[in-house]
Image (cartoon, rainbow, N blue to C red; front, side):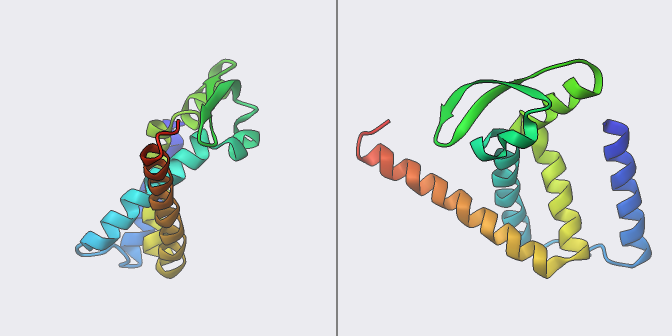
Length: 139
C-alpha cells in the first residue's frame, strides 16, 4: 500500500511539474480549507456509519461510537488487514485524503474547492451540533 501511495504521488507530482501546475506558494486560505476538508473527509471514510458498507470487507463492527460514527477493528491478514487498518483510522486516512484533495486543487481547482467547501461546512456544522448538545447538558 505504501508503494502504491508513493508511486502515485510521484507520478502525479511529475505530471504537475511537467504541466507547470504546482503552485509557487499555497494560499493560507487554501491550506486552511484543505485542513478542515481533510479532517472531515477522513472521518467520513473511517468512522461514519453510512460508509460502513465500504469498509465492511476489511473490518469488523464493534459498536456505535455516537454521533453517527462507529467503532470497528481491522480483520483478516495481509492486504485485507492493511486496508482495514487504513480505512478504520481517521488519522491513517488523513494523509491519503489530504493528498487526493491537494492534487484536486492542482488538476481541478474549482471543483475541488467546491467539494472542500462542502466538507468544511459539514465539519463546522458537526462542531456546532456538539456545542449545542453540550450547552443543553445532553450526551
